[in-house]
Amino acid sequence: MGFFLEIFLERTPEPELMEGLAQAQAYAEADFSQANAQFLRLFAMAFSDFTGHARVLDLGCGPGQILFDFAQKFPGCTCLGIDGSAAMLSHGRAMAKGINDSSVSLQQCCLPLPSNFGRWQVILSNSLLHHLAEPAVLWQTISRVAAPGALVLVMDLCRPDSERAAAAIVKKYSATEPQILQDDFCCSLLAAYRVDEVTAQLHAHNLDFQCREVSDRHLAVWGRM
Image 1: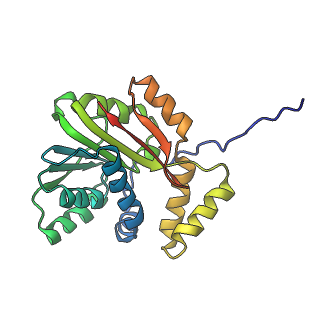
Image 2: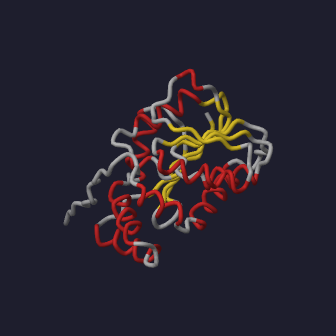
């Protein structure tokens, strides 16, 4: 009987914060509408009974587009987005002025959040996990600030099997984007975690959430506290 060893591409970490002005501008101007719409569809599928009127926290909100879309879909919510990058948040604050949405606030801070940060009925996070050298800070923060019964949805990139596969994904989805964004996308794919790795992280923090691949480049985690 023959045996073979399945070898996966090792993770290559990237900087935790996207602080460069050119980086932030390229990210803010990029078309993430497909991935953002997928995030909202996943939330609606996972929590079909949610009707709004909740305190919503977005961890690693970047320029805040998902949070603005969420607030528009659920107008009864009070939303706070946090991010460690001042450059990213500057684009989000400019966007907030343009749409005049007082239900969304943005704040600069980094994980882990203190226990006195309040309790939140909905916790969202998109494309933050792969930036974290120590993923425990995300799951610890969620456990610390989630209200009882809180709804949690985390979506992130999923590391491909090879650098060639990563390059193919970049070409498929970002061929028309600026080179700086293509390079960042490739680095992010190589820095992403795999489903088995995220599942192990959840088990280590006693979080009974689902974790699944949801596209050829994304995984998602969802559940109720």
